[in-house]
Length: 333
Image (cartoon, rainbow, N blue to C red):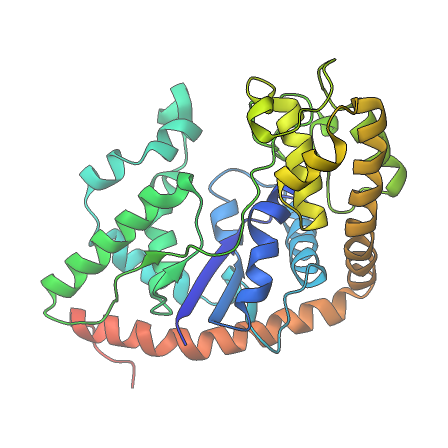
């Protein structure tokens, strides 16, 4: 089976955007690929995290992934820091990657902004750790959004230089995984911006643990326009909020935007929004209930993550040993 690796930061309970844009598509991949899914807590600390928040959010993210359908019997689900080989291979890659390569990474510039001199060095070398995350398992496929494609290219540059410099064929080439239908979910307050946990307004997003009444209220308050829904998606041009709500209903009901509009053409948002809220509640309520159940027993959740880390480490350590041997490190025994 083709091996797939994907990681997600423990930055709080996932939003509807995280779910429809990525997590939901990870579930069927368990049946067709050799999948490793990782809560990347080492990446999270490139920016300061309160210890109690990092601990809570790591568990919340793991519980959310399980509640969305990841099955530890079908995939390897673990926490990044539980496998120290990630950090060790990242250091080896720090010594292979070139500063010029990292200087071209647009995400560092975006996140550091005008305050780059005060950014952590971890944020600067973040792409090297991402390369280590993937290559540690010799994964050949990674589901990534457009914002991460540059990092994937860097990972391939690092793999190629390592193989060339040390005359080995250790690390494979990585390709972006293209599969499933990833819905691009936008803010409920501004249809031109992605739904994001970093938005200061909680009204801009649906969180996977939002109560039913909260979902209904957020959809009721979602920004729209006064025009009725058109008959085809072409009629949504210049109407980003309308396009967003139609896309969300299509995604959670397993239909196309064309089918949604064919059913609701001519309808105003006063009638459309309650239908959308009902569909969201029906889809998300079982996920929220399962998350709550998992988080009530953190000992069992932690044990499941430890078992995942053991499986991941069994795959990771041989690769790390090969890399160190190729570089000339004295073996421990």
